[in-house]
Amino acid sequence: MAEPAENRRATLRSLALSLLAGAGLWRFLTPRRDARPPGDLLRVAEADVPPEGALVLPERRCAVVRQAGGFHALDLTCTHLGCTVTATPQGFACPCHGSCFTSLGQVLNGPAPRPLKRLALERRGGVLLISLDREA
Amino acid sequence: MVKELLKHLFPRRVLEANLKTSYTFCLGGLAFTAFLVLLTSGVLLLFYYSPSPERAHASIQFLEDGVWGGQYLRSLHRLASHALLVLVALHTLRVVLTGAFLRPRRFNWLVGCALLGLAVAGAYTGYLLPMDQLAYWATQTGMELLRALPLGDGLRALLVPDRVGGPLSLLRFYALHVVVLPLALLVLSMLHFFVIRRQKGLLPYL
Image: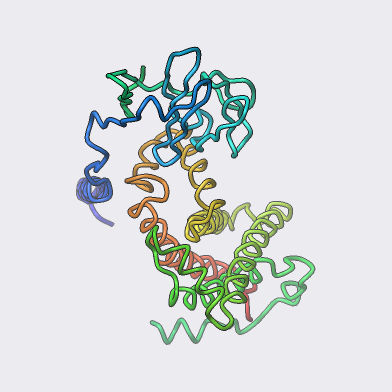
């Protein structure tokens, strides 16, 4: 049997070592975010958005909706579990669990707890500038 | 030591009562058999699978269309993984119903619980690898579900450093699926069997 003090020292040492190893492993496994640079702007010509309709850009997970002469941009990530919603005649629907949204992004039904995120949009001349990482 | 271990791998005496399969139905042994099938078919799949988002799906398509026995092998791997999960669940149920989780087998019950978790993790990480629609969306939702857990955001950051289906996260799921999880399963299974053997139970293939 080791002396209690020695035992404690060994325990503390192995505890400290595993904490250190854990922290190192954590740092190793979480690299710098290579996310798109902040302020990434999506440029869309106003003429490309059909009147009383929407231009859907599934690759960028974004839709530009034109309604009553006004424009708004929606983030197409479903607020339930993150699938990309698809455009329907009524608005948007999620293929994963069936949430439905109006064309303004409000929840019609389904498990989604919140409306779709609205993205910041700026009209400049005939071009719409949409910030993909900034909410309206 | 290895020699000693091999010498004692097979018990000298077996209790007749332990030989009745109607007690355990050999569910654990069957689950281990499914695991061995998974290892063998998985190693063969490694020769064709390519763990990058651009090529993963194409490599599986090639395996199915251009490789003799490829379809069979992939189906075998998938069915064996279903079988493993079902058998592990039934084995757990049997252990619960016969009270085999009580002392003195409590340690082995805990090892078994870890094995159950590893089996589920192995199946889940394998789910993303084909990179088809089902794989992608199932992983997308699963990773979102993870965030509901305490420390879930950290766990998600470990599994998905870029984005679901991105090159880093696919590589991570791949590494877990083909090296880390099978190795952990194998080591813990050996521990599981060692404890069973010491407690005079029956081992698979004995």
